Length: 121
Image 1 (cartoon, rainbow, N blue to C red):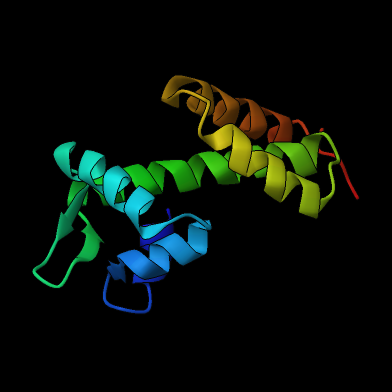
Image 2: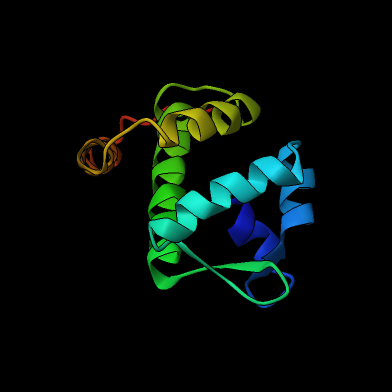
């Protein structure tokens, strides 16, 4: 997600130092994690040590963003959680939940919206 966000300003490319600063970790830790992402085919690198998401990596980011949106919607609209807390919690949940569960949650939210059972703030 950080590579995606940082890359928005640079045609998709991000620097290791910017990733480290954004995540609050060392460049060495970023490099170790990038090797694993590259091995899985999620990123590509260039000769200047710039990093970019591969099509496979971009697909994963989109899936994560959809999950986050679903959970944030559920937390705010159904449970009435504050926008701020829902943002924090949805970030945590998105990484832990399967694709199947997020699809089922989407169906559930849609059914609730159709039945007008949505929390009003």
